[in-house]
Image 1 (cartoon, rainbow, N blue to C red):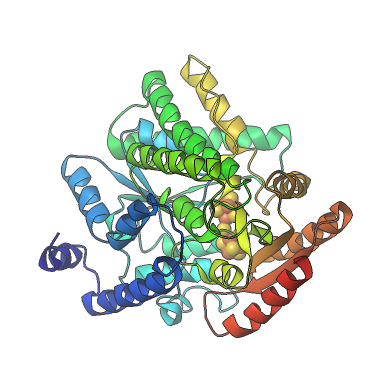
Image 2 (tube, protein in one colour; image 1 turned 180 degrees about the vertical axis):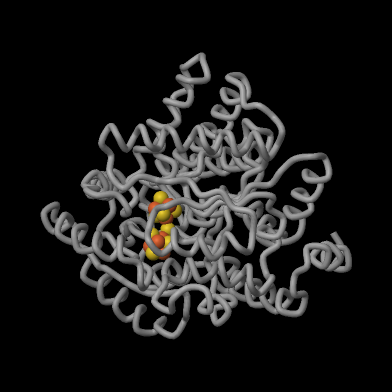
Length: 425
Ligand code: BJ8
């Protein structure tokens, strides 16, 4: 697409063109420094570079073409929104990334200053007219996970068409029943939006598509147990980030190709860092595009990241939806069962998360765990303490970091990470 065609498309979406150009310039520079400067990247990473370079271009054009063909676009902020249902209704689902500081001052007119950057980011992007994904959406789905998000959606709902799903906070049978009812309510909202009834057949097909994507991401996650690490943590994170907005069928094929290449690399004993480089597992809050600060600091401090225990990582991909039920009601039960396994810190108790982190660290041969919490995020700040104790019991070195989307603390964080990595060497 030419620059002029891009600009015309963004104008039609009523973006603030000048501010948007400035944002893309910063993103391009950031990407060059953090991604393109890496050594020993896989050939398949060219696809990631291409997708990122066209993140506000070709993919938005595809969404506009889908809309012109009568499809609806659904935006989400959380992995509790069942993509299976969205696809079964013939709609396109995109994750709204919320990983950069934008429109912060404007956002703070709607939410308290003591709100995490992820929330401020999606509100800021909307108020500053910077996100072509948000502006392409026919419906945005929120969810009652943390207090910050659920109150923010009250304000956001006045700016965009919204549906909010209630996500329970516990996992007793009555909570499963509540979420099962919410799945039905979301199904009905989608049917109203698209004018298309979700059938057993359309849901079965959509479930296969979403499971195939999860399997490809699971395959990649498993290959990262190899030493030397065959792919950098930054690239693996990027794969997970892209999974939220790329076309699911194309993405799955590309990631399986990437995995084929990785298998070849492992067979030759090659990697992105020498064998025995300190290996770290990142746990905690999700890292949306372009939140690459901490992974970059870690991997420029002599360590390699071998796994992400977050919603932009294995928390979102470890569980498949059962494909065996033949009728719609049983399929909705299967969806509910699958989504209620998610071990988000918003649940209480949430001890399975501690077990998952320890098991991941063991499976991936991690030498240590770094817990990442966003400043002002209460659920993950609480769990950082619990995770620390669990890692101590398991004998796994642990570092807890709390930060935001700013770069002001980068020097101080690097010092802490380097000191931690040194203890592992
Ligand atoms: S299922 S992790 S995607 S809610 S960082 S906004 S928790 S104050 S992102 Fe999440 Fe769904 Fe859970 Fe996953 Fe609140 Fe914390 Fe901010 Fe957060």
